[in-house]
Length: 208
Image (cartoon, rainbow, N blue to C red):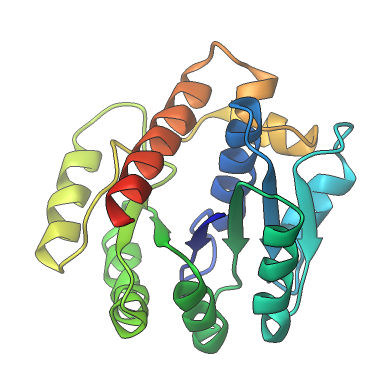
């Protein structure tokens, strides 16, 4: 079972949106997915409650029992586990990073958001795990994505793909308990999520 942790010490970075959309996209590709929601707000679990489809499996879990839930997922035959973590919780983020094969750090393109990912990068270094930054909620036009990518590179971050543009499809899909690959399969939002998943899959192969 391959495991991806999504961490960010800053709130509002888009961890849960990324987590549920990657889970839905992986399911669409035929993977059996376990999504562990470590955030006390349980936003991913709430998404699951709104969902008609029985999969992916979403479990609200305390960080202290992360290893047990991951082991249960392995025993149950899950192909792919995604860990959605809470902001402002270094211990839980460190545990998630240690348990993962790869870490994703969602980040908005503002300079304060970019500076805030330094603590998440430090957590990943401490855990000894490779981390990639996912630019989130990008404007549809302009040079902000390129400028943000350059700033992330300067602080030692590594990008994975072009990022995610702020699109209304993400809000509509979340409300409906769907991923954008289900809500609008031919849309630009779905293409962006599928591109990130493909890059994650490639990075996981290299990490073996």
